[in-house]
Image 1: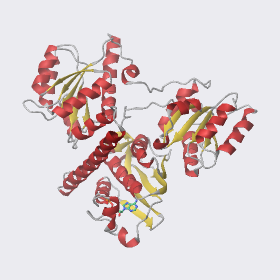
Image 2: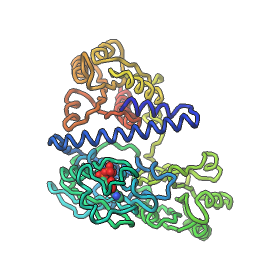
Image 3: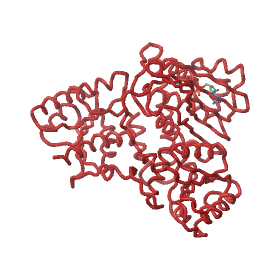
Image 4: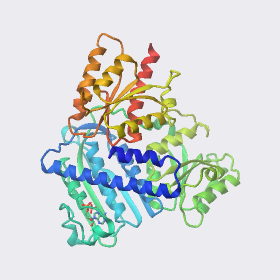
Length: 514
Ligand code: ADP
């Protein structure tokens, strides 16, 4: 699957004719569907065999929920559908639990909502039901509400039975296996909750589950996007123009949560009038968050008027729209739009973006970083970082090579652990991507050898494990073997970038202190 999905992703980035792109895109979606199916079946057999264990690690809850939704956002593009996410600010930010399984249940429920909703809203929420100390933890309720086809009472009873669907025409029309909800329920139960459904045929459904989550013991450090500290936003005046009331409320709550003052309007005309009124006051709007799809006067049109009227001071316009509605870059620039953000809006991303523009609007603020990998970590050497890849599968080798080249890194690729050890003796590397399962010498053994040879010498080459079967305990096993991080296959660009950023920025810091 790594080969199919990864290579096809690379293919999609090349110059293709429209026809080729259509075919490659079909390969992508079929690949994703097949991967989902395989994972479902694997999960189910693990659950049935009593082999599925729930992890307990620290993670950032808000990020997890928002990212999960963001990953599915492309599915609503071009539809008459809003995908909204809202995390109650009272929910503890860092918790202890199983992020992978939580993400899986959410993904599944949101995936279903997307499948069975043609228009209206899908609203994903996380709210705090009760705050608990210590062992017992806080109760957090996660819910996915949709305005889709709904489920009649009779069918609701069968939903959680494996291989069953609401009615027999479902497979023909929507596909699927009837495994998703059965797995969700089992996973939720293993995590200490249960999945419940409320639904009215023809109106929509809400699937929800409540989990006990303890506060994290430490603060996880994987900050992918750094939002500026909340102090930066104190009293910042932000104006939201959006016709969807739920959206306005979410943006308002998210921004007020960090100290902004928020005003809203439900349409372009009303919005423009408010901006004009504000110009004469002592506090004009610094930022305008503009929804793209609005009746009567849409976001682009509104932006153009703001641009044309040359307001002074002119507000920074941030456009918010679904991915499919993104206009051409030239058009965005010409309308004076500073930034285009895809729905659903992730709070941290929005704050990071506001922070980035605050300097421009007279409020200096730091802590935001959206540059390419090497620039971001401030790579100090003239030559790019040297990465050694040990991987026995030829397709994966090629995939890793191309990905690293695209990131501006210098890669050397070898076939197994023994060769990796040899390569390490012969040259210096800034990082090793090490497949775990390889013939001759596997990744764990090779790592052990490399670490032993480092004893008495200066230095520590970071090793990132590449692994297909991330089972509970694997992480500990890899770390115990001397690895620094791990990335699950199929390899996704974002995951690799995160891991490389993590280890290379450490290398870089070490270099600085020498
Ligand atoms: P699958 O989606 O693979 O068919 P699931 O177990 O996830 O399997 O779902 C079982 C059935 O429950 C679906 O086939 C569908 O009939 C019904 N269902 C699940 N979620 C929704 C929803 N949000 N709206 C309407 N029907 C749903």
